[in-house]
Image (tube, rainbow, N blue to C red; front, side, top):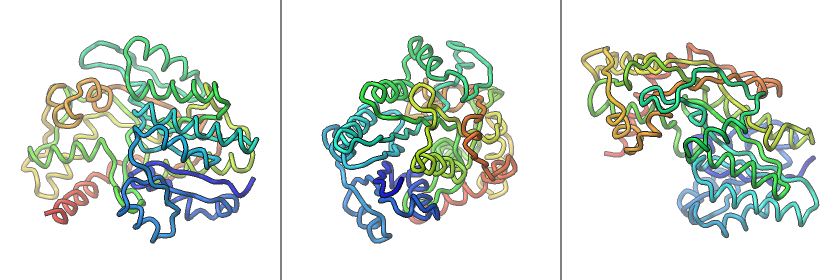
Length: 351
């Protein structure tokens, strides 16, 4: 299958920029013959990407559903990385693809970016406790549905809308649900992730690394380069006409190692101490409300699910596609100092 038109949203972001870079530079014949575009907001950023040889689609914002739907109608595949929490834009993209399918008579594909905070428990508040390791070969769709009925969560609700809308209009959907993402991205703009940088920014103010409660809960992680490779593998297989699990069975994990929150905070504390930013290697325990204020814009549910929960997954379905991540737990442990140094450099540039 050649001559595909592929649209990447969030093209100036951390995940989207790295995926876009991977796809544009891929040596895969089908990808080289495809037209790959980035969805961009703002003339200045669009100009930068255009000068780098990237096709650009301009849009106003994620709430412009009619505009987004119309743009998606010109593509055979959409990779949505702009926001896993924005239900309206995801639905608009899928509806646009459905119109494309009507006009061409060919299958269209929607690849959605989500996160494993959807599966996290709530060990701090005790509102939902569950310690288990999920596999992407299980019925994750039904689990998300059950959890969302108990407690609505924006990212989880968006997953359900993606699957439901896709099934309704005949668009094949694939959700890549990632844990904590680390490493420096290869896009042309934002090159840092969300969770660790948020913790670093707070630590630079307090001059000490922090953790919620005891930090005993555990999460998974994946390097952004390995994650982008998973997206590329999925795209390549779809271009080759392979029938991958989709819809209710199309939720793919990308975990490649795990850590406790205390181990993460200790790695950050060690980096801050080594660089002379902090006078102590000790990690300070804070409560959920403090964590929400520092790391999650005041949202205590997001802070608990995204910075203090248990969320463990096995990427069995993803690995069955031939995904072989290269980074190790050692790479994760060694990345904290680089992250802090990069943030310090950005601060100097913006002075």
